[in-house]
Image 1 (cartoon, helix red, strand yellow):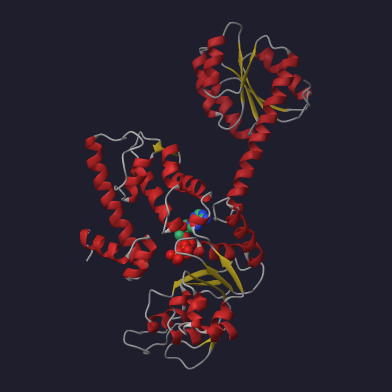
Image 2 (cartoon, helix red, strand yellow):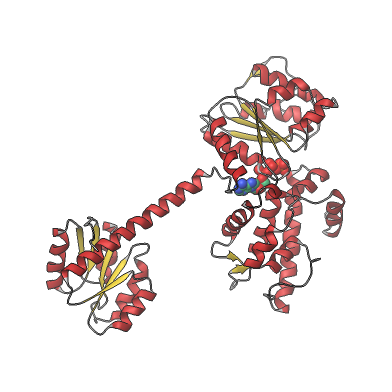
Length: 457
Ligand SMILES: Nc1ncnc2c1ncn2[C@@H]1O[C@H](COP(=O)(O)OP(=O)(O)OP(=O)(O)O)[C@@H](O)[C@H]1O
């Protein structure tokens, strides 16, 4: 097989002056940029300086020509192929070097043709590796933070990219926890406003009065406790994007004021007289059936049409089961980068309904990842069941992973985790129990039971 000569940066680590000279000039003759090091210290310094794409390493290093010193160097040349140079009959050494991550080895005296071929092959591998890393990084940023490869998810990402370039208002519709806020953030990030602020407000968590003051600000003395003029979120979002989460919960008097802002970019702070202006792109979202609300008169029709310049739908997880393993793996890696999901765990994850959708999946997988014991590298179905608080299912499909002593620690960890999740949900929902229950993907009665048991009521 012929190898196309590609030039690259090569670090040659060898203490033999003759080989440094001959090998070096042979490689330079092939067009490579060659650095030479005579011992381990020089090698590491040259590695940092030259950033080679390939290291040729003679294992016998001064001062004692001990091959162990050479072996120790291999892992230090991270992410770069290492070709080890060994003497005749050093088969075991070559094997150990390969185990430590060496890419190939050559036996001395070195045949120039072999050297040329091995170097060309190793450089090609180095470039493919680098390309793969770049592609992965691009893919990671390319998914706009919206992980998933189901057709519906791919289509949603494409729509987000297109709509982001326009100025139309966007209404994001979908069940709870399906990524509506994520879509709003992605719209902002892909838009010409990405350098400006992204400001989110939950319209259902506040009373009409508080919501108005939060959105449009208030003047000093306009109500008890208004000690100074306070600008609202609409102004904070000037030049950026204002995300109105659960717009369906917006009280009717506020709906009129929002409509005015959408039509004219104008608003009046609470207690103020002068009209103010702000330029914020509005993205609204709701899990409720706004059309039905328009029909029954609880949501203004003119506001509905104003908001729904473009409608983006985030489907329930049940409608895109192919996304479950991809999402679960991504969430697990965020809390336990070296852990994986067992086959049983994947089966358990993909057969559940996920009423709380991605938010619920995320919470369960992250909790399971946090519950891994220090020497555990795999999340199995049982750990997921523990993390989800669902102990009602049948017999174990996989062996238990902890001792009974560990199980006590596990219970405490689970309780703590549950406490944290419930507290966070209550805080995010501004103390509104229905909203907190929805965020957790459980019923309100279930939440009240939990609050009582956890001593939070
Ligand atoms: N495609 C996805 N990739 C990665 N994370 C996701 C995805 N979809 C949702 N999430 C995560 O799930 C959680 C819930 O998402 P988000 O808050 O955007 O949902 P939502 O539909 O706005 O929820 P709600 O209706 O309760 O306001 C967040 O932590 C979000 O990062």
